[in-house]
Image 1 (cartoon, rainbow, N blue to C red):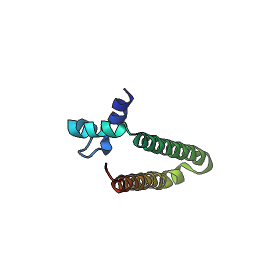
Image 2 (tube, rainbow, N blue to C red; image 1 turned 90 degrees about the vertical axis):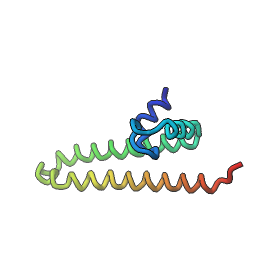
Image 3 (cartoon, helix red, strand yellow; image 1 turned 60 degrees about the horizontal axis):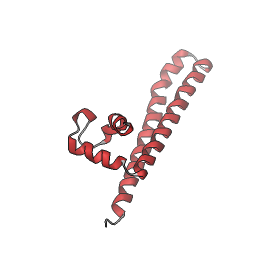
Image 4 (cartoon, rainbow, N blue to C red; image 1 turned 180 degrees about the horizontal axis):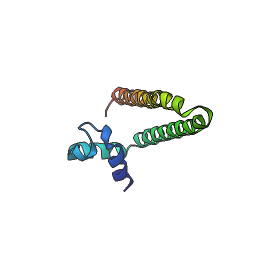
Length: 109
């Protein structure tokens, strides 16, 4: 059950597009990856980092709403969003490319 839920949420990263548009072969590949403990750990770590960062961003926004004027908050809000999501996206892409490089470096039996 969990792997199906995980696929529905995280399957957008599977080559081929959104989970609705992913073919059966891509889904089978994702399901195969999910059986790997390393892949599951990586997915959980990424989920935790994104979750904590978004909670921190929301907390910062609440704190700023009490400290600065609404007009100023409206001005810096897009910058805050771009900074948080840009940093998280860059980190995620870096982690993914490092994982792919490590997979390529492991000789197949």
